[in-house]
Amino acid sequence: MPHLNFVLLYVADPLRSAEFYSSILGKKPVESSPGYSMFVLDNGLKLGLWKRADVQPMPEGAPGSFELVLSEDSDARVDDRFAEWTGKGLVVAQKPTRLEFGYTFVALDPDGHRLRVYKLAQ
Image 1 (cartoon, one colour):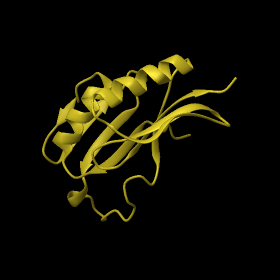
Image 2 (cartoon, rainbow, N blue to C red):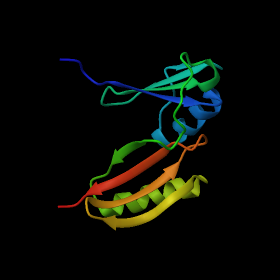
Image 3 (tube, helix red, strand yellow):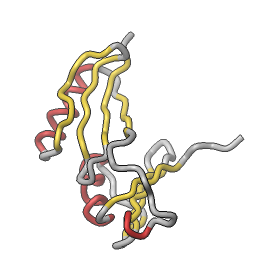
Image 4 (cartoon, rainbow, N blue to C red):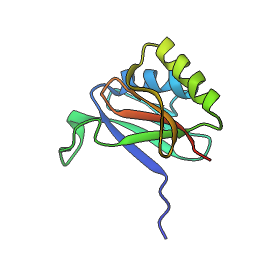
């Protein structure tokens, strides 16, 4: 069975996006160029940042059509992450709120991709 281990985001400027993701992930990309940057996260997931103008076939979806989701182990950690990210100037699409599935907020990367942080409800 295939193993899902790679997410690609189509971005305007991979170097700018790599700088952004370095600041929120706390790691440097393992590869970085004007056309493509890549991170390997501690759990093995790869995050690729591909220059949108170079993608073949040309993508049809717009940024914000899906979410990258990061889990935290407590509501307090969600609040900490919100404070950290807003302190770095991230645009917030949804302030911390309690929804049916848990406590969450949504921020946006420089291209408008949605980044959701949550703590699953017990």
